Image 1 (tube, helix red, strand yellow):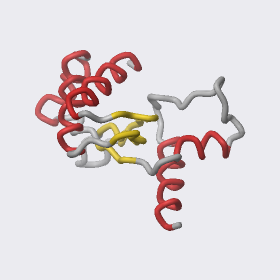
Image 2 (cartoon, helix red, strand yellow; image 1 turned 90 degrees about the vertical axis):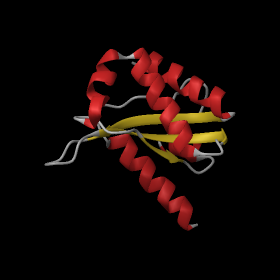
Image 3 (cartoon, one colour; image 1 turned 180 degrees about the horizontal axis):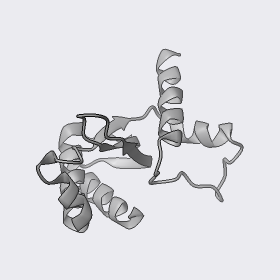
Length: 131
């Protein structure tokens, strides 16, 4: 799964001329009549000119490399378009610092099965917006 995400991110960067510093992704759960999706928090070194174009390229490559993802995305029946949030610079470094794991041995989890890290990063990103 991480390999597929890395390939999709690389293609989206290549095609949009963007560069990524860090990223993580997690689920948006299905609720009642709302379908699920994947939420990505991406810290860009060089952001794309159009985040929606980046999102479409990422989604297309994920479909191409993962038949299960493609089936779930088909017709937006159970999985919607990925949602991407461009993070403030330093968000992931600040998170690693906050858990005393800043350094070469520690990495940002790329794909998460729950929303714990996503919610924490969203809150940190929001606080940084307000400073």
